[in-house]
Image (cartoon, rainbow, N blue to C red; front, side, top):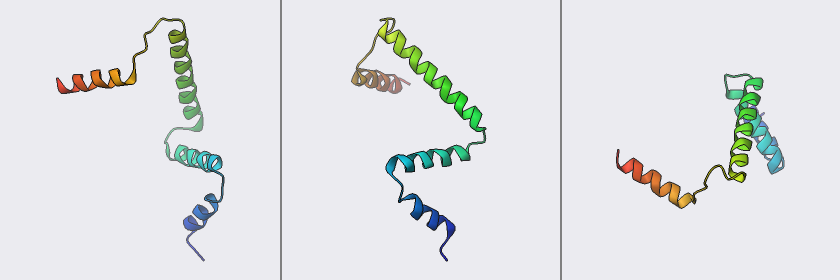
Length: 81
């Protein structure tokens, strides 16, 4: 009989890509010391932050910058250190 991990991996590879991604996410979550509820709370907080930032952008409260400009500025700051 084969190693259980090899067997499980072989079965997992038969899943669709979205199902494998879901399984991988669940396995990674299981490695965290926090509870599943803690992880959901963190996800909810990030979702709220994303929504807040999008709303600020759409309301014209913040100015967007091209990624190339942001990276150029960040590299410049790192060089000055």
